[in-house]
Image 1: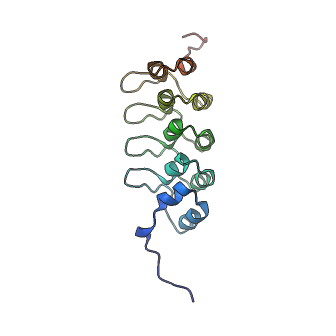
Image 2: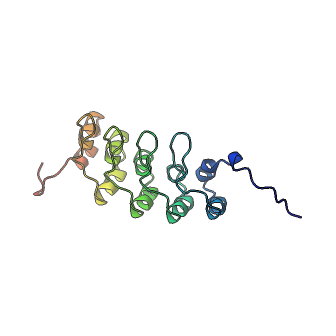
Image 3: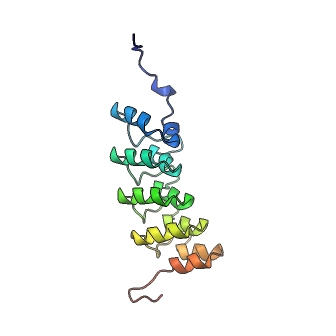
Length: 170
């Protein structure tokens, strides 16, 4: 005999399911109509939580089910910006392949490259540049990612992020 009592969805922590990477359980709820762009009280989407916690299958599932790869949290940070902080290159590739904007800027005008510069994510910066990130974009303080890298003492990253003109010079 099965219990036909409906699940009280107010007791289900979908963001914890995404954090743990339980794609099979999440798929059941998505099949039942769960919004793939569901956000928690901080504005973090399921996709942002899954990618930030390096959950490849859950990230793929959410993207396949239509989660917005650019959906910002309350601070205006996108999932890709979280990857720039954490350095999860494979999750960043998943997001970029699904249409994440490498030049998306948060409410302070910072892009994923600005975060790479702050947290010395050299490999992530290379990936973002390969995918079209613009190193000449300035944040609300008029700083480019190279300016930020230089301010943090990351000369190698500052050199990589230095905007180039069409002929290869500054």
